[in-house]
Length: 628
Image (cartoon, rainbow, N blue to C red):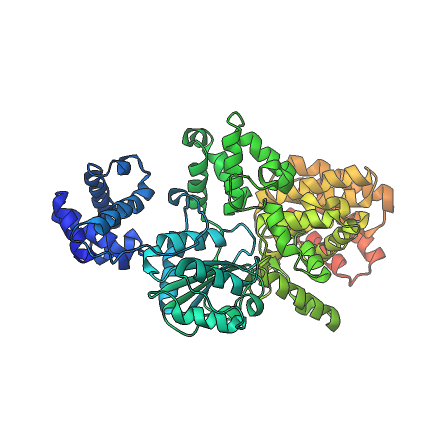
């Protein structure tokens, strides 16, 4: 009896309806094992929800014959039903055991129901392996812990029936891969080549006599393709499929499946599989924040989930605060969990890639970690020295190859949040951390100084990519700003938003500018006057005249004390205060201030200076409106 006929017979025995039978047979066909429910539903011309409902009804009916189905998670029921039916198929009196034992050495995997968020990748992987000879799983986010090995393990287990010739799992970091292949062939197929043959000849003998059927070879954790894979590949034959897992990026000649972090919903689903659901329901927003903080990295999520399971009285909010404080050094993610197959904590997993970098690439990684958690606008073309430019190009290429930075577009890269924390930790451990941070903030200050008080559309377009990084300096790296540069990041951010009419976004930066300047420079400093003047202008523009006036007056008094009564800055302050009086109809107070401002500018700057012309224009406009 063929498998398809056996399935149809089982459907009749268990009184499935025609609709249930169609779903059941389609789902259990061997050739459909790699297809998603959505794909199968489409082939049956029904919706995914309808297909799922029919399969739920199928499981309920078969549970009467196979009680173990009743106690299974929904995602595990399919595999249990398949196993029950295969046993019956192979043991039936009229059965021909075409479904036989398949030899394999697949390592243990997490339970199928706990492997979430990778359904699409599993389907893509199966499709690629059926249409191509080799497929490499590459972590596009580049870090250990993204789930490359687990994806390969789950694929091998779920598609075991597709590989009647066996699944041979090879550790690229273990003993010689060729010896591993020979041991598998001897143990599983009793294939023993003469000891006095060369290794290549012994391998050729194994390939020629390998059990019939499609074969899956998995090379896990490849770090050197030419040494660990290429010498041991089987002959060109469509029945041999080769799957690689690696942190490296290969060239385009080798088909690859980029593997990124989980989607937010899948990350929450993974957390729910490890932590009591009611506990997560009591703090749902905090749970989402934890997932985001961890960058949706599967390894980090599983470590935290298991940690929470061991600490039932610990609130999610308290854990998040501790993670934010201790970051990668917190015990929840610092070390491997002994119950997990993966033997590293998050930082330990990243360190494996760090060890493959030279000093130059390590420095560049640490430098990039000082940028905010946003797209990083960095172009090596801006480096004038050709030798230095080449060094940076090589470093960035190395970081991308190990997927420690993520290429977004030309001149734009991005760091995963936990990789960023790792690089920052490494920088802080170095002897020149302060020097590097001081150089970085100085570079961002130069960008901030380019922001005009009234940016045009082109300015806004060109400067927007730098804004989060200037904000990072203002928020977290301000202590590395030189006194003379202290206020520039705050002024630049204030002007950027104010120039677009985004006054609510501008106000906090200009307020912080005043506060940080007073705290570091004291109350009698010219930068205090500049900061007060900028904040007063914002209040003036937004009609908060009662808040603007005392700030203008403070700035004017401070400039007079520091610079004398006839300095151009005094003229600017007089002009701004006059503008406020003009706006509020206090013409008698505005006119003498404008006259003083114009006289100072003409004397200090000359009649043709742009500032003089600007004040003269303001005075003329005032006269037209005040005496019309």
